[in-house]
Image 1 (tube, one colour):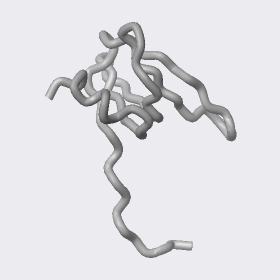
Image 2 (tube, helix red, strand yellow; image 1 turned 90 degrees about the horizontal axis):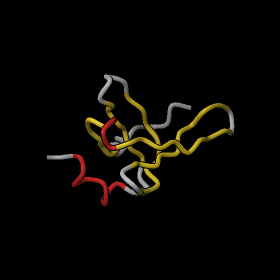
Image 3 (tube, one colour; image 1 turned 90 degrees about the vertical axis):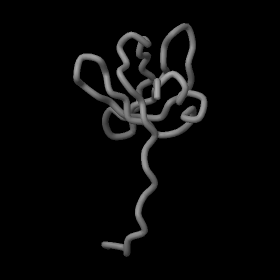
Image 4 (cartoon, one colour; image 1 turned 60 degrees about the horizontal axis):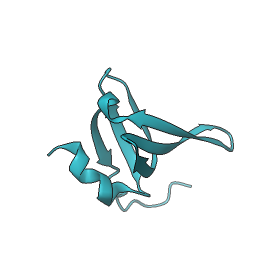
Length: 74
């Protein structure tokens, strides 16, 4: 499936993004404007950044899978 068709269902959700250069990133997909994905990414401590990725940079995008039910480890 072409990743463009997934965007509407992934807005405000945690996503993993495969970039065309072989790298990847993850964050919350905030929206799409002017051929760019807007993603909030964690930087450090309590710092986050809104990053913009042009469509041509993106190979694929996927939502995070749900957590498995596991007993508490703490």
